[in-house]
Length: 140
Image (cartoon, one colour):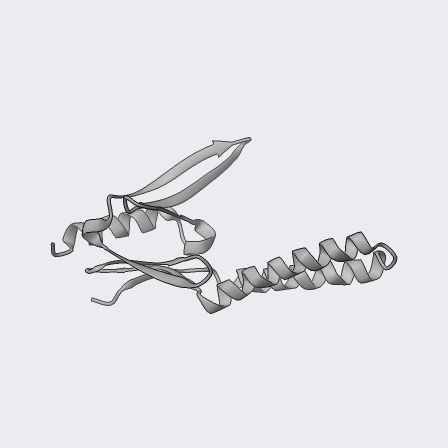
């Protein structure tokens, strides 16, 4: 059986890079004399570029097979967790100020890994369902 994979939507790094470029263009057009605007624009543009680079270098955020789950932690480092080490896989649903948010939670006992719909490219509830089904069928 081939591993299941969930990845960042391809449009997200493009949008982040376009946002960085747009920010620099706006500062060039309207903030030529204010050094504070330049510093803020450069810092935010660098952060957006780094975020986009992470999406391009490590687009697959989560994969799973019969041996366990492999996930991206930190910038691009991968961590493999065997199924016996996974304590719980669930979806955390919250509503705050009229906005609904869903995060996939993978609890390994020593750490909690959270993945949003943007990182998975699909609904976290579907991913949790697939992971729990794979976990139930995994050999011990």
